[in-house]
Length: 253
Ligand code: NDP
Image (cartoon, rainbow, N blue to C red):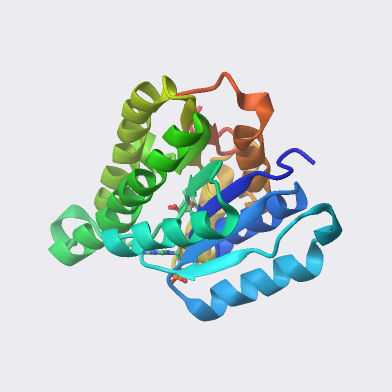
């Protein structure tokens, strides 16, 4: 078990990559706090993890779901406080909650722009600011920020998403400098195309074309991201700080 006894906060952990990661972290022995908007899917995630992960006899504790919108500062603060109260420490924050609302520049509304920046960028800021004092007091911690290859290379129709995900990389580098000296490593992961509900709106033809651009010839699976997050949260990544790790099957070589 690579994360035995660690406490991990996973935003957007009710579905998709976040949910797969919550399950994998739990399998690696971590105590999990899931922060997400939807109570039904959050509680379903907790049920799934509890039914699939064995080992309470080793001190493993049932995951805690906290319903919160990461764009709301007070909700993010309260969610972190609840998880800290329950598990008494926080070792890992995975800033995974994210949305896309795509439109070409000429057609993108102010609401679309604000919503995407609010979840992906400000939500990451809100949660990290809530967790940082706890990690500083502990003298240790890991923050993993979920960016996207779109934040590195841009993508047609994704002004708001590219802005937010590039911003996440900028904040990662600032926090790696600010928090590194406090024993906290901050890194970003830039996934390529991963098969989750987030890709539901992408037409089949476009998905097929995308596959053709990926040297590995296929989309990634949520579990393949989860393994990377385990690595970054584990002792094996002790000296990685301020990095941006692409996990995209070689798409943006
Ligand atoms: P999903 O849409 O499958 O899951 C995202 C989760 O985040 C959902 O549970 C969603 O809740 C939650 N969420 C959204 N907004 C908020 C909010 N304001 N507060 C709390 N929770 C929220 O996405 P993926 O699993 O595909 O993506 C996870 C992360 O990976 C995102 O940051 C995404 O940008 C990034 N990524 C994904 C890629 C992909 O191809 N899938 C590629 C590159 C990056 P709800 O059910 O309420 O919407």
